[in-house]
Image (cartoon, rainbow, N blue to C red):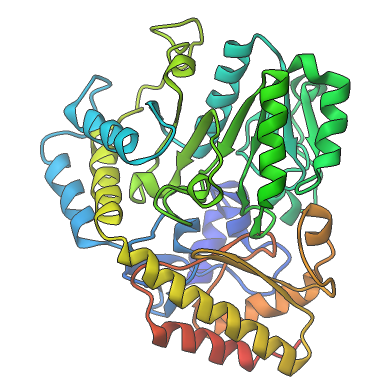
Length: 424
C-alpha cells in the first residue's frame, strides 16, 4: 500500500491515524511517511523511499537502527523468555550495571516508560518528604501524567494547547510553575510554599521545548534551595541520560540530584524506563516501604536484554560519544554559517548529540518564552523541505534533532547541502 493510503485507513481505527499526536503532521502540507524498515542511520518507508534519520525514534536509537548486538540479545532472549511478571537474572544484570556505572544511583526501579518513571519518582519524593507540592518548569515535558500537563512544551505546544482536557483542576493544584534558567522565579515559589514543596523536577538539558541546556549556576542554586527547604531534586534524564554523555547531564554539570529518571536509550529501542537514586530514598518503595508502585511488565526480560546490550556497548566504547560530538559540532557550525549566508533568522542550541535550530530573531534561546518566539511558518517550510529531500527531522519546532553512532561525515554534509537549498 502507498503511504497515504495506509495513513488514511489508519484514521478509521486510531485517533488521527496515530498513537502519539506529533506523528500526525498536523498543520503541515505533507503526510507522514509510513516507516517499514530501519538500518543504521537510515529508515525506509512503505514506498521504498530512503531517509537519513535524525529523529532516531525520538532519541533511543543511539546505536542506530537494528544494531547487530542489540538484535542478537533480543533474539536470544525471546527464544526462551518473553514475559513472566517474575524476577529474572536479566533485570539484575541491567540494574547492577546502571548502579555501578552511573553516579548517585544506589538503587533503581524498572518501569515501562518515561512517563511512568517521572510520575513514580514524584510520588516517591512526596512519600519520602511527606509534602505535596512540586515545582516544574515551563516548557519542560515530563510525560503525560496529569500533574505534568501544565505549560508542558513538546507535543502539547506543537498542538497549540496550554495543557490537556480531561485533567481536573484538583490534579494540578499542587504543581507550581517556574521559569527555566530563572532562579528568581524559583526563589519566589520557595518563599511562599517552601514548607510544602516535596521536590523540583527538571530536565537539566531540556529537549521538549527544543534543546535548551540549563545554566550551571541555575542548577547549583536549585540544588541549594532543595537542601535548604528539605525538598528533593529530581533530574529528568529520560532524554539526556546515556546520550549527552554516558553518565548523563549530571556528569556534565557535576551536580548531584536525589533521584534521576531514565527511559529511551536504556531500553535499546524497546519500551522501558527507570528511576533511581539514594538508597535511603529508594527504600521507601514497596515492598520495603509505604510508597506503592508496581507494573506487570516492569523488568521484562526481552527489554532488559536489549537495554543491557545497549548500555554495555556505550559504556565500553567511549569513542562513540567522541564521534557523535564531532559530527554534531560540524552540523551546528554548518547550520549557523548557512543561516547567516542566506539571511535565515536562527539560533542553534546543542548539547552533545542533541541539537535544535530555532527559527527566531532573538539572539539566544534560554527558556520557554524565548522558544515561543520562533516562527512556526518558517519551521513548517523547513521541515517539509528537509523530509521531501530525504532528511528525517522531528515535525515540531519544539523537539530535538538527534544523531546516532552510525551517522557519517557524508550524512552531515548531505543534511547541510539540503538545508543550503532551503528558501523560506
